[in-house]
Structure formats: structure tokens, C-alpha cells
Image: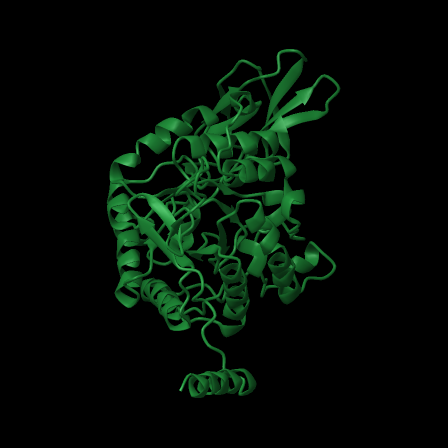
Length: 447
């Protein structure tokens, strides 16, 4: 009888393999939440380490990038979406070995280092594009094989004003429902859903029914639309870089997605502590601090009870996209490995890294033309042993700032997009360190 059973099993395996049929691959890694902790395959993440129960992640949204408008041709000589995705997949085992539990992948990507990219997995009516999903599926399956989670983001604010943009509110809702249904049909159990990247971002003002889309009520409606299709799916949406998450969303979401791009290291504890009352996992899934400052940001986040997400814009997100594991940023990945290692004890002096952050305005702020802008900053652990000078860079223009200032007034010359960054130079003009960029819009006056 036992011999007969073995033959039958072998016959089934033979049929599945040689007939070309494939069993769902996304069912090895099971992701779940218990209280405010993450579990993978029934075991708490990163056991015995400072990051126990946290979902440590890296933003790799352009691992599945394409540009249907072919704007990439002005940036690089050649770009192959399939080769780009495979280059990332090749390094997934290394990232996981360094302590990464999850990767953020987007169905509309992120800023690739230039404006105007047409990069979306959706048709204008909200239906899904198979060629785009095929790349996403490859990433999901590769992560699944390594016991890693995918935070799958639906919407990115810049995907507007082109022929393939979502055409109306119903299309936006359909896009979410179709995505949730696809996850269910494919049997992916290592995927959680992010409705929108930085949902209040000013870039969504160019979308249809934008007042609804950027509202808390609109985001709740979209989360509910996903859950109506796939009730077991863990769903959230993400806020701006100030580390805040409103109560209406915190109540509706399965986990709390925050960004720390515009958050000073000194404020991490306050931001995280304010969200613990909801007793749900707190996940930063975007912080673009790099090097020793990025390593300190990771540690501050973990020590205060929130998972941390690394966005290495100039390497992983700007074309040509580079995925080389630890080489992406040795300081940050050393800290990833340390904070996810059982028994690791952090030397607190590692947290005292020179850091400068623009805390206002935030990424996505829309400000009115004709008004001055008071740029606020936090400048921690300045190196007093060497003379330095501070400047505010606005696009390509540099404005000198006194080193002890916490505010600087800037007068926008005209309406349009602006990128703000604080830079610290030494006496010889060599850049010592810099803030993460802040992406804002000066809105024209309406006569």
C-alpha cells in the first residue's frame, strides 16, 4: 500500500513538471501579525535580536521599472526591464543574509532620477498589464524562496498626466481590487499591500478625484476595497516623511506605514512612541539617510520599536539602477546585520553621527506662489574640530546659511517644482555630508 502511494505521488509530480503546469509558487513563506509583531512561517522575525518582531525592509521599487515613454533614452544608452529585474533578483539572497526581511516593490515605481517616466502596471481603466506583472511575480517568487516578504505598493504620485494614467475614481478603485484579486489568485502569502506611497503627497493633486484620493476617508475606502476582495490580505498606506500617521488610518490599517525622510534623528522616539497606542506593527518603509547617518537612523528606529526601511536613492532608485547587496551602502548594511543578530549589543556612540535634516517643508508639500518659505532644519552632532559652512541648495542654486541657524527664509522665484537640500562643506569646499532631498511644488496664483 505504501509502495502504491509513492508511485501515485511520483506520477502526480511527473505530470505537473512535464506537462508544463505550475503549482502556485508564492505559498512557501507565510506572513502574519500577532499583536504588534511580525511573524514569518509562524516564527517571530529576527528572534533574540534588537529587531525581534520587526519587518526590516529595503525600498527596491524600481527593480521592476520600465518607461513606456522611453525617457530613459536621455539618461542611459540602453535599458532592458527584464535584465534590470534579474539583476535585483540575483542579489536577493545577499540582502536577506544581511538581515533584510522585506522588499518594497511598486506597481508604479518611484522617481528614477528624472521626471516624466511612464511606469505603471495599470491600464487607464484599472486593469492589470501582464508584462509588468510578470516581472513583479518573478520578484515575489524569488523573495518567497528566501523567506522574505514583499510590501507591494499600488500608487506613486508622479504617474499622472500621460496616456496611461488612471482615468477616474472608479479606475483607481478597480486598480486596487484587481491587485488584491491577483495576489489571491496567485496564492501569494508573502505579500502585504500598500495602497499609496505618501498618500497626502502634492503630486496626487493631478490625479482624478484628487481631493478624495488624498483624504483619509479615500484611503480607508481603498483599503476596504482590497479587503473586500481578499480578506486575509494585510493592508496599509504610507504617510509623508514626517513620521506621522493619522488616527483614522491607524484604526483601519493592519499595520502602520511611516516615512522618516524629513524626520530628524532626535525626533524618532517621539514619532514612534505616539503610534504605539494602536498596538499594531510600526513600519518605516522609506528613509533616505545614508552612510553612518543612515546606520544611526536604522538603530534609532529599531531601539524605539519600529521597523526601518532603507531608500538608497542614488543607487537603487536612480537610473542606471544598481543592486549589489552590501556594496550599496556598507555602513547601513553592517547595521542591518548587527541589529538582526541575536544578542547584539549596540555601542551608543554609533548613534552620535553628524546629521542634517530638513524638517519643513516635507516631501510633497504644495506651497503658494508669492509667499516666502521658512525652511526648518535639524543639525545634530556637528564636528566642531573642523571649520565648515552650510548652504541650502534649491535646484542648482546655493544659498549660504549660518551654521547655528535652525531656520532659513527662501524666496521662490516662480511657480514650479523645487528640490531642496542642506549641504555641509569644509573650508576647501569638499562636501562633508548632506540632508535627504525635499521635493516640493510652488503652486501658481490663480487670477
